[in-house]
Length: 238
Image (tube, rainbow, N blue to C red; front, side, top):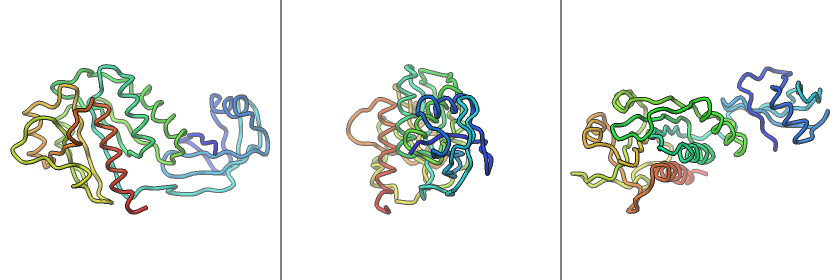
């Protein structure tokens, strides 16, 4: 299946952007009568037939639509402190999109190594992962957000903070405490971890302390581990 992303798709006909038209006609060598799939990133998957094979203005006709394609029964928000090396953060965005994540938040913390991201560039990484992994839901990405502002918001479902500091209570293993079907917000800190004040602030606002195992992970590895654990917990319903 060849999947294209078009958040502005119109029915019954739609003309791909020049970039996507070139990819369909010049790279994939599709022509009139061939079919491809388009998603709007909101769960709608459209089977389309090419009616004009212009390399600049490829036009398709929608012949079948599926709503909520492979919709998961849980919502996952990953709030992660971007790494100093942006490539590592982009690797996380790619893999987490492939596994299954609904929203990303670039978290600005006391020990953050990076305090600026290029949302447009990082969104392109997410879009590429959506197309590669054949997803019909496109995760959102929120720009750098101060830790306390984000933690103070209201969220549905369970709220977790993963950290390496000592804890008064025994930290729970994420895969053991999360239940299938539960929405979750997970905080992952920078290489220097969250500060003691941030951890206390999160706990005061209802976040549960968790561990991802006995190993010490890099930020992006810990974040991917968390997403994978959530997916595995929910796989029992498949």
